[in-house]
View 1 (cartoon, rainbow, N blue to C red):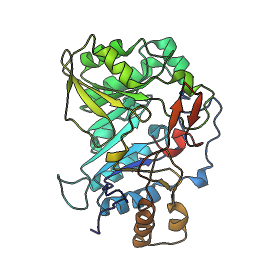
View 2: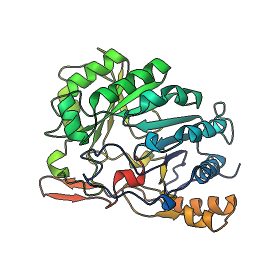
View 3: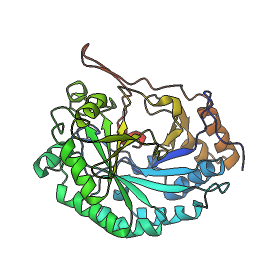
Length: 338
């Protein structure tokens, strides 16, 4: 194994979020516009290319791999790809092997794939769920069905997968539901993670109107729930508390009110082979072009290392309701990989 990837701030890059598609069967208000134009098939890496790049990252010391999209489970033959990743898993701290493979999904096809995910070595999944109200769910996702996602969550739990529910906190959208979500997660044995909306791409919905600082949400929840500080970490940006009444954890991801950049250990690889070293900035590297030009793995690792050498100290997200200002990348989250 070669030297691990290190960025200019001395942060070791040990976590790769690998997008397999920009497509999704929902159009969530904070993620996509109503009428999306998706990538041509030739622009998207095939499974052999994705697997090759995953191996390069793992060889360089990446320990955690998260499969994302779009919605990863809508890609054709995704099961075969997930099973092909399993040999990358190893024992704890085994050089050149992953500690874990995880997946982020909207749950629409989770019932179909839950048992296969377990066979592929996946032990936990993050499921996007912003409301428990069926009508509101369809409004926020623009086409999803709550019952289908709940069936997927149930199937995942029955298959033995740990489930974390990801909820984007939206003023005027789901801000009256956090108590219900917290109680429900306690009932099903799932952790809950609240996420501030991120200004990425035009979705047709006002980010300023929707922005809800999670510091305010936490203070409000603490009036009714006992929130105990927790050292729990999953390798991502969430910071957790334990909810004494349920025994489950509650996480907060706060890119706007309190950025988590000082401990960032992540890079993202889009389904087109574009490496993004920061979610909130555009710099990166075109690994697809280099790979399709015949480069060997050493050259790919070299380009990755050069890009990580330019990784910024922090993102440039900005959202100021008082001034009516918002700033972020023009690309949608689904292009980057969630």
